[in-house]
Image (tube, rainbow, N blue to C red; front, side, top):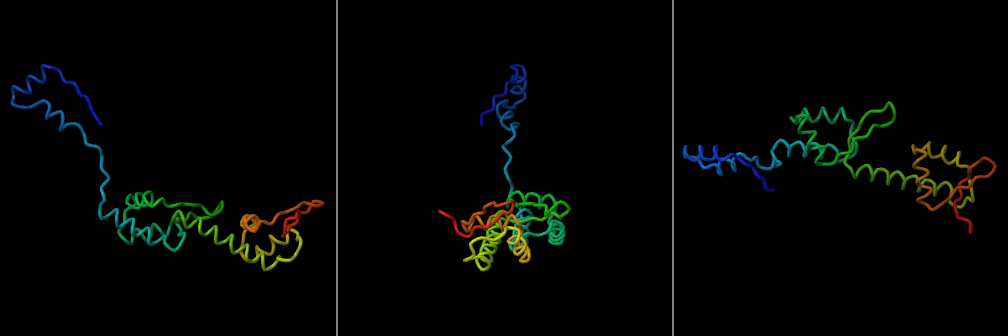
Amino acid sequence: MKCIIEISLDLATKLESHGSDPIKILENSVPAAPRKRETSTSKNAVSVLSSLLSKGPVLSQIVMERAVKAGVSRRALAHAKKDLKVVVVKNGFRGRWSWSMPDSEVRASYNSKKRAASIMLELYDGVDSVDMKDVYHNLAGHGIAADVVDAAVEFLNWSTRAEGGTIYLQTHNLC
C-alpha cells in the first residue's frame, strides 16, 4: 500500500535545519499494517476449545467454566471461537445455547438420518404403504424427530402420497 503525505516546504526546511530528515520522519510516522500475533494465550485458547468440543456439542455454560479453569480469558476464548469457526446454536425456544465444531453438526445430522433410515428399513421394508402418523409416532419412540424422519424418507428414495386427508408412506415408487 502506498501512502502520499504532503508537508509544507517551511516545515521541511525547519526540520532539515535542525538536522532531521523530513522523509525519514514521515516514513516512521506511517503506521504499519496490523499483524495478527500468535501468542501462547491464543494457542492455549484454541487448544482448550478444540479439545473440549472434539466429542460433540457442549453447553455454553460448561465451555465458559472450563475455559476459566484452564486460565483462558473471555477475549481469548472469543478469538479462538472465531478462528475455529465454532457453531453456536440454541436448542429450542427455551433451550440452552451449545457450542460445537462446524463439521460435528453436519456429522450428527447425517448420523441421525442414517439411523432413522435403518430403523425405517427394519419396520417398513416390504410393506407397501403405511400412515405417516404411525411412522412419526414409531420413530419418536426411538428418539427421532419428525424432520429427521422426512430426511430419511428422502434418503431412502421413498415417497409419500395423500389419500382422503391421510398421508401415506410409499416404500417403493410406483411407475
